[in-house]
Length: 186
Image (cartoon, rainbow, N blue to C red; front, side):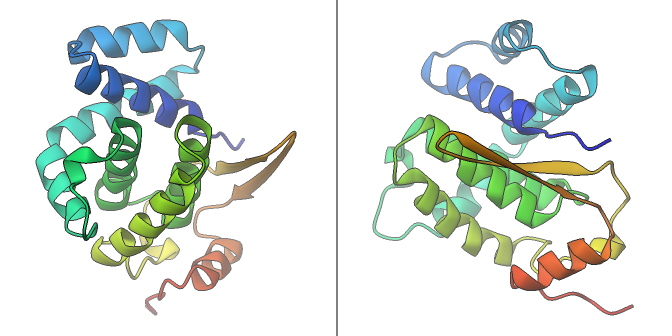
């Protein structure tokens, strides 16, 4: 059965925001976030992994992301946008089984929900560049570990559209081509 990791990404975003802006301890912030969110244990584990991974690789992620933002001080970005870019960057660099299309689409949708009206476009532009610098620049869905399917949830107004992407499927290959990623032939 396909599951969306949207709640995990949102929980990681909330945790990272609280740590940065509220100066909360990582453990307290994550515990409070998980207590407030009703998540399956597997989704909660992913939220913890995301937040911990971003914190562990924060300097590296910040360097990668800030190098793509010209004419603007990275530290002046809204904390929501900065942490969302870090989460997506972590997925692009350190979560090999998650298709880059899923990472980018999820980041855009979360930006639209929690940040400004223009944040979705901004996040899309930065991540479009970041994916080219990541190990997923030439992403091949057949060369990654098989994971459970993940739903991509797009929200627009009152309508919600759900698309399921099967890891290693012909559809995943086609979507990678549409997204402009080069597939390696084995």
